[in-house]
Length: 152
Image 1 (tube, one colour):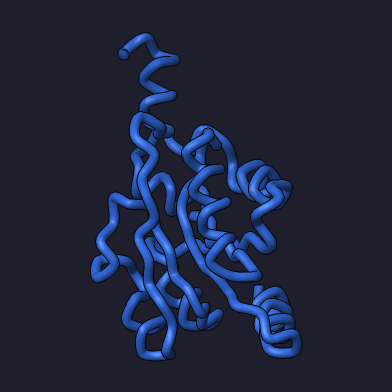
Image 2 (cartoon, rainbow, N blue to C red):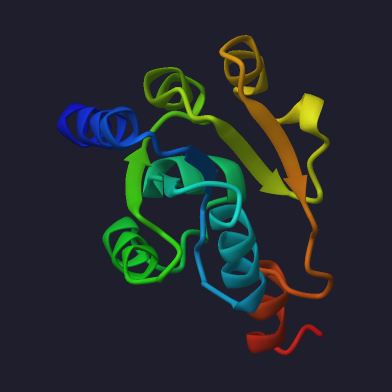
């Protein structure tokens, strides 16, 4: 992980590129995720996705999650055009990871207010920007799971 973070920072500094950071579980990837990641990429040059580890997804979402293991979720994200780097983190939040990367832009989905976004203090004190992107209504992993179980 340290090597990957060094690579990201070196690339940004040597080529004057803007780092955008977001994070999430991305358990069952859907069009809302892809729309959101594409919008995040438009805010800079290098899009880094902090991916919750299997243990942190379980902690956040319950014993029946994740549906897809972290290696599979990472592979899928890494193969999206908009995503440049994926870093798995095991803590409940990516706060420490944000402190190491020091992104120029920190983004989350529209269900988060900028002042509630974990790591906003780090990014703002470093001269960066914190944004809440539009939420795609009706698109969520929970809704997909409920539909598959015949609950919706």
